[in-house]
Structures are given as structure tokens and as C-alpha cells.
Amino acid sequence: AALTQPLNALREWAANRPELQALCTQYGELAQAGTQRLLPGPTGERNTWTLLPRERVLCIADDEQDALTQLAAVLAVGSQVLWPDDALHRQLVKALPSAVSERIQLAKAENITAQPFDAVIFHGDSDQLRALCEAVAARDGTIVSVQGFARGESNILLERLYIERSLSVNTAAAGGNASLMTIG
Image (tube, rainbow, N blue to C red; front, side):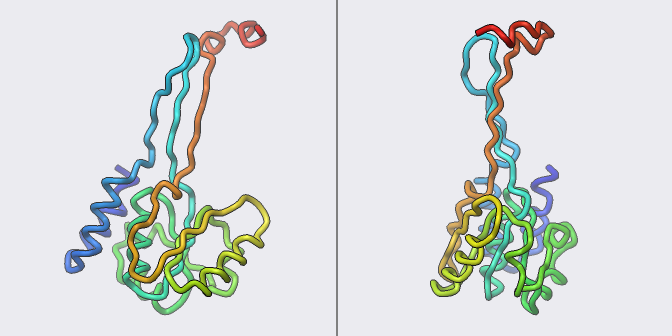
């Protein structure tokens, strides 16, 4: 429920924007953050697979429609949004409900790629995308996925906004018999 509350608030806020409402509904139905599945394994072993939201997603768009599309996708998976601190995005943050704006962080555009983020969604032209990809690739640390779209596209791949975790527990050894951990 906590993961879906900001998306629901955005959907309600978008009462006079049927396209955005439809996207909120679509992304909400596709979202799987917090999903945990039990995987098959041998006796004495418990294997789980979990989808968790990436912590923060950098969203770059130069028009309101694309910025709101990106926002809906990121809120659907439960991540935070990193937006450039410009007039368009400041105005949107002020207009959005507090449950949504609390999930948004603004950073100066000139050093936005120096901020911590785990994924990127971009709407714009190919030259801007190339420059952004070069800046993201030049960063130290882990490789960050960049999704690039033309203006107006809404087919954001939510699966790229998750972290997959798999955990295998030796249930026989977890019961207290530590010598079972060394059999082999």
C-alpha cells in the first residue's frame, strides 16, 4: 500500500488528464515492486526471488507530458524521481499533491549526472540522448541503464526500474546444526 499511494495520488490529481490517468492505471497494473516468489529447489533449501524498486531514477524531459509520463512510471515501481531544477519541473512539483512531490528531488541541471541515481529515463532528440549517455557512462561506479524515447512515447520498460534479488537459504543448517554447512 505504501508503494502505491503516490501513484494513486497522481492518478487522482490527473482527473482532467485522461491520458495520464490511463498511464497511471496501466503502469500500476504492470508494476511488480515487492513481488516475492518461491523458487523450486532441493529438499533442505529455500530459494526466493524478489523484485525491489531502484532507489532513485533520473528523469529528463523538456515538456510537461513526458515529465508526467516518466513520473507515473517511476512512482508505479516505488522509486524516487530525480528531476532537473528548472522552471518546468519546479512548477510541476508545486502543482502536484504532497504524496507525489515528496518522492521528487530536484538538482541543478549542470551537475545532475553527479547526483546518485540507479537508472535514467530520457525523452528528447538523439543528440541530447547521446550527450546524456556519454555523461552517464563517464561516471564512476556501477553501470546505469538509460532508456531513451522520442517525445510523446509512453512505452517505458518498468522491468528496468527494478533490482532483482535472489536468496538461497540452507534450511537444514539454518535450524542450528552449523556442521551441516561444512558438508561437502
